[in-house]
Image (cartoon, rainbow, N blue to C red; front, side, top):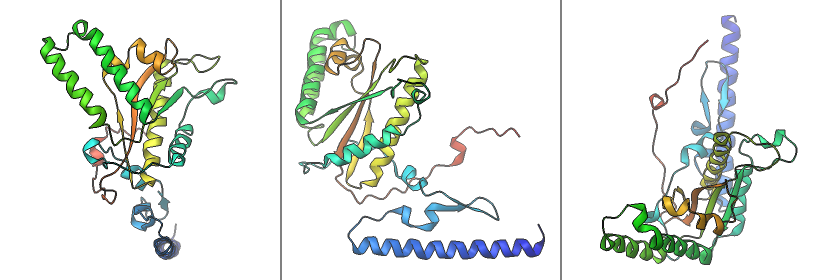
Length: 270
C-alpha cells in the first residue's frame, strides 16, 4: 500500500471512530433520558479496539464478558422484591445458544437440563440435603464426631433462612448423559452445559440488580440418588451444582478488574 493510500485509510478510520463516538454518546444520552440503564457497552473505548493500523474491530460483546462477575451471599439484597420471571427466561434463552453437538444429529436435544427452584422448592432441596447427611454423615468420614457434625448441621439449617433467604431462584444445572439417539463423549456434554451456564452468567450482566454465581453445592448430597430423584434425573445424568439468582445489595457496583493476557498460556504456530 502506498503512503498516500495508507494516509487516506488512516483518515477514514479516524472519521469512522469519531462518528461512532458521537452515535454512542447520543444513544447513551437518549437512554438516560428514558430511564434505561447505561453501561460500558455505550462507551466507544470499551467496544472498539484497534488491533491494527488499518481496521478497527467491533468488540461490542466484550464489555458484557468483562462485566461478568460472581456475587456471593454477602452481596445479596435482604428482603428483595419479586423478580420478573421474564429475566429468568432471558437467561435460559442465552443458555440455549451455547455450542453443542446435538443440532448436527436429528432428534438430539441440548445436554443441559435446568430445574428452576422457587422459594418453596429451594427449601425442599435444602431439607433434602440435611436429611441425606443425617443418614450418611458417619459413612462419609467428613466429621470426627457427632458433635462436630451437629455443629455443621445447625449452621447449614440456619443458612436456609440466612445465607440463602434472599435468593430469588436456584437453578439446578443437570448434564443429561444422553439427550437423544446419538451418544457423545461425556466431557463434550459437560463442556456444552458449562458453556450454557457461562451464557446465562454473561446475560445476567444486562440486569444491574442481579446477583448471580455458580454454586457447586454440598458434594455428597449433590451426587446422591436422593438428589437425582428430586430433580427427576436419569441414572447417568449428573448434577453440576446450582446457578444462584438473587438481587444485588449494591447494583451500581462498577467492575474495575483487569486481567493481564499473561494469565493465558497461548502459543501461536504460523
